[in-house]
Structures are given as structure tokens and as C-alpha cells.
Image (cartoon, rainbow, N blue to C red; front, side, top):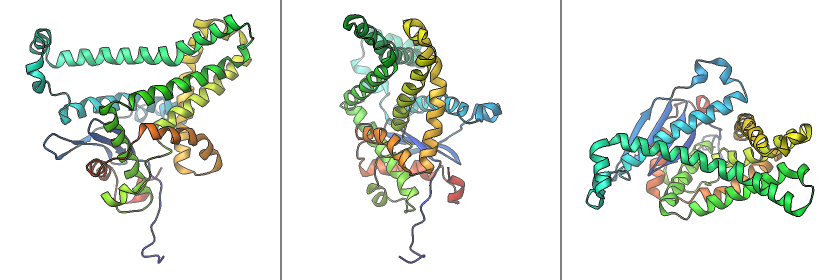
Length: 327
């Protein structure tokens, strides 16, 4: 291949998130949200992103920045997700007006958007409660029951067993929700996001044809991040369990310990994901393998209209100089 036609591959800091009928991309030029609206066109909106680490420098140091970035991304991503639902027409209450009950109509007339904000807040609290129940409380209680009824001394393996349970619960949960039609479409947009980023990283022109042939499995995906977090939580909680064995014997105290370890786990996981985005060595391949496999559930092959949305969002956040977009 001549140098003129040679494709220059490069890594990028651009990351994305699948939305309702859309994709959010964040890069050197900020963030952009592209949503396929009911008339078939693509609504592209630039989003202002403010990072607290820009004001408080210590929050930008390695490990600490991972936890801070995770919280900021969750809040910002959730807001964009709700906004995309409105733009795509999913949250259009007028379309459901004829089917509304008297209570629904009264709430809509008297509270309007306030009611939606309240419902959204309640849903968020319930989501956090469900996550705590599934990934913290349930594994701990099950291990306690196994230990009490089997008579076996499994205290030294508590962290490992709980970690394996969290892994099984996570896989089962994702497998279940992936069967829902709306979630399937969101996972298709997730695939379009990954393919678009890969196309750029492989130095190819951002066209539907070029994006379509890319892999939908990317090492910097949030799914990989979740797997890395589970692995790190097992290692760190096992270390704490060995150093302070009495902590694991009190259920409430052990739950507090696991929650307190979360910021460190998130911080280390974030640093690994950034490292994985820049390297392709054996360690990265081994630790990324479970997450890449899991993406078979959390990403689906997109159609061309979804790829167009991904390209639109991606082009909006990159610069003319690829070096400015690097990790």
C-alpha cells in the first residue's frame, strides 16, 4: 500500500453513550447529542459540560478523577437520556391522552413537568435501592446462609464467592433486560456508537459503509468497566478481609466496608479503561475479555439510520487535528 493511501490509525479520547433513539458523544470540542426525531430527521444539539475537577484540581489526579468522572457521567448521561426520550417522542404524553385515567389526567393538568420530575426522582431512588439490594445485600446474605447451614468455614472465601454472585446477577440482569424491545433498540444504538468510534480509530472516512463493517465490541465500553470493577472489588475486599478478618463477621459492618471501597474501585477501574484504550498488550486483552464478551448482550448490530446518528454526533465533537482527539 502506498503512503498516499495508507490509513493512519490513532486512539481517541472520544466516548459515547446510547440514548433513546440517539447517541451522546463527548470529545475535545465538548458533547453533542444526536437524536432521531419523529419526522425522521436528526436533531443535533451541543451540550455544555462542566467538570468540577477544573475548579478543584485535586479531583483531577489519577484514581480520584475516576470516581468523580463516574458520578458526573452518570448524572449528565441520565439527563441526556431523559431529554432524548422527549425528543424522540417516547415521552410525548399528548399521544397517550385519550388512554389516560382520571388520576393520570389530573396529575398531568395540575403538576405537568413537576410530576415527571417527581416520578423521575422516585425512579432514581428505587434504581439505587435495587442496585444495593442485588449487588451488595443479597450476595452477603446468601453467603451468610450458606455458611450457617453448611457448617463449612467459608469466611476466607467470602469476598470471592460474593464477587462471583455479583457477576452472575449482573449477567442475568443484562440478559433479561436485553429481551425488551425498547432496550434492544438502545443496544443497537450502543453498537452504532462503538462502530463509529472504531471507524475513526482505524483511520477510515466516517461513512455509513465504513462504519457498518467495524466491530461493535470496544475495550473502553462501560460494560468492560463494570467487569473490571467487579474483579477489582473482589481483590480489594479479599485484601481487607485478610487484614481485618473481624469486619467480615458483622453483616452491617461488612456492607459498609464494601460501600466505602466503591470510590477506590471506580477510580482504579477508570484508570484501567483509559490504559486499555491506549494499549493492546496481553494484560489488557485478559482483563478486557469478559467485558468484550458481555458486549454481545449490551450491543446489537445497528441499522444504517442508527449509524447515521452515530456519525452525526461523533463529527460534532472531534477537531480537524486527530492529535487533539488522542487519549
